[in-house]
Length: 277
Image (tube, rainbow, N blue to C red; front, side, top):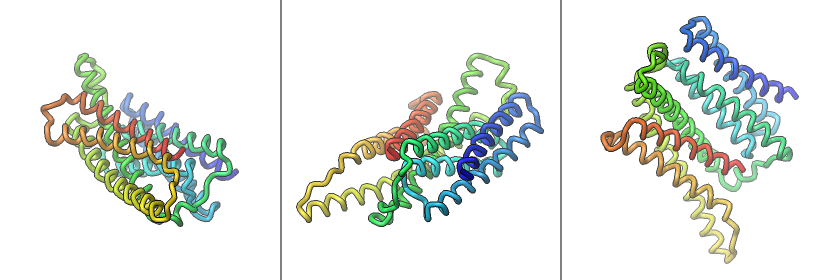
């Protein structure tokens, strides 16, 4: 019950941080902006406490669907918190990331309700590299989220500028060049980390096939097909984004690169959802 209450508090804190941040950015209200930062950091602290309490209550973090989603939300929250502390314009990112984190917590709760029995940690004992594999995937997801949020802000500003809207003068967001730099840098790091995670996963897959061939049995590894396919699609989208951002920026417009980043994040989220299912 205590764990559930803390999760609800996290959702409320993230919601309040997003609302205060939006108000502070929209109206230029400094007190609201400072309050948004404080509430967001409080939410991250409570979120970290939830992760710790779950780990203690189950004698280790269970690598099941609900906990994978919860860990993904925590990684996104921590990365955003770091940006909030070390950058001047981090409030815009935390304002967007906060509701996403809250939604992931809700999804984790819903998955736990659908499958109360959960899963055990036997997968870890059969494959110790599962932990770094999952951690790398979540780090890549956090990078992709940072890149996509930057791309979305870039697209929104360009849309206002194209419409010659006065709202663009009221925005308290990073400059277009800064957003583009953050987006392409985060995307490049994310795709490199994801490729490292995929190499670990493919190595394990080859080992499984070799073991089954050696003992002369046919195991059912069909459940891995959608994961592998989505991994390749996600990598292809982000590789195209990085190629257009670093190698041939003249070959595509900024809006096209923004759309690729957002589509790449959607593919990565779908990959996590399928893997957690």
